[in-house]
Length: 302
Image 1 (cartoon, one colour):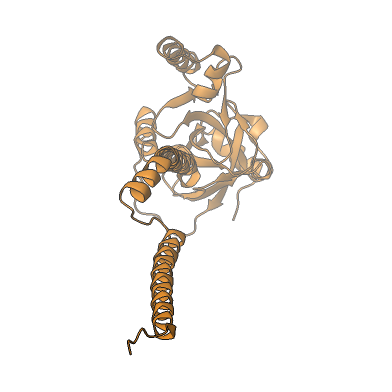
Image 2 (cartoon, rainbow, N blue to C red; image 1 turned 180 degrees about the vertical axis):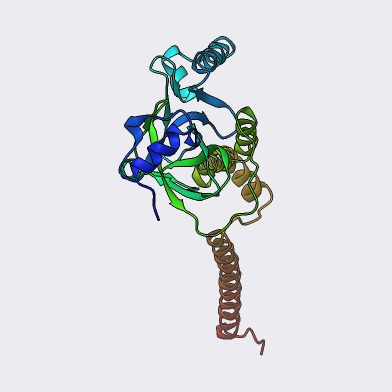
């Protein structure tokens, strides 16, 4: 059986169920959990509702180091940090993810279990709560989740934002073993360690995009280099080709092309024809001389 708001309120007033309770977050049969802490992939705490000024100071000092050590303009600082230092809010960009820890701590009686999931209003913004889960009887501590921005817009997350709803259920039968979970700062440290395993964007899109850009740049540079080499070779050849042509054709008499070979064959054929004509003319001349000798009157003495 699911608990209604009167039962939830009664348990809270008796020192159980929800710490840091806010009446405005209570609904008919659920309670809306709020963001108490945000942790970026890599383990950096973005804000902490219990230590807001210190975290804000840390981010500001980090931003000043960027401005001092790098050449970032001041208007790019917010984009570099992914955080609005003035309004104290985190910008969750498209395809990016962030780990949140609830502001409330849950103290479950042995007779109850619970489940929590993303609010409909958050889901309609294009945010997905990846690890909605079950809370076992006897659990005491914070709750957490991973938010992924599936939309094409940047989503602003402020401290105290209602992020998930939790429903409570009665457990039938006996529960013999009470769960022991880390609470407080230890829970946050565990989240920070786990956050080091996450990438900045879903499916590591940012790294893949950068890899594609780098590969494209390398290919373009390689294409320009290859094209430049080819162009240089063509220019050099066009410069020395007339000299080579004259030297090979005129000095060595080596034909450079099929047309030149045809010309050489024609030239040889012409020489042969000229020699044949010369021989024919010589033969004709000898034949004429022989005929004249036969036609002369013989000088025979009586």
